[in-house]
Image (cartoon, rainbow, N blue to C red):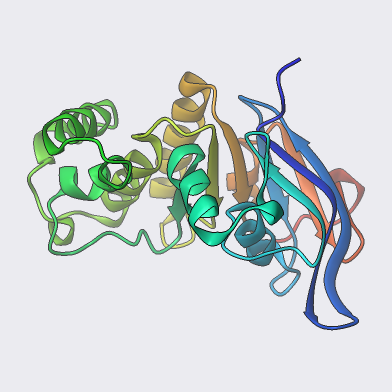
Length: 230
């Protein structure tokens, strides 16, 4: 039986001893499955995403990505899991202004030790699949917000990760551009059979998910059982 891409088992995080942001969180995400995490600001959604990414450690429970329990790994080993198994899409894009598009997209491959020539070819192929093939040598500042988000998506996909983490990926986009970006995220994750965990306030963004879960202090619950945010 294939292991799930992401498993949370009894996960908790406290901002100080005895004061929990959340605890007792359980979740299993399979390859090709898309899960939206909803909840009001301050509920801990981004904190949870940081635990899944191995950028922070849970105070209790187990977070496992691609079969590896992150809490048992040191920082260099967690960084290796991020490089090999996780792609990130952020609200603020986080593109490097002085690098052309293919260089921005190729960063995950270069961190893995892939040669610059192969990394460029793969980066340009992903950019082409997202409609930016003719812009690979442009700088990010020449692009619209929607185009920059496509570059951020290309960077998240180029190393073919098992898990895509998206933190408010349409928060800086107008509704029409957001719809295009969401359609691309939907299609590209389906094509690659990648698992997607999407943190959002937007019901428009959450609509692409197979499951919509609301983060509470004591559980991840079906969003249909309560408010899903704004």
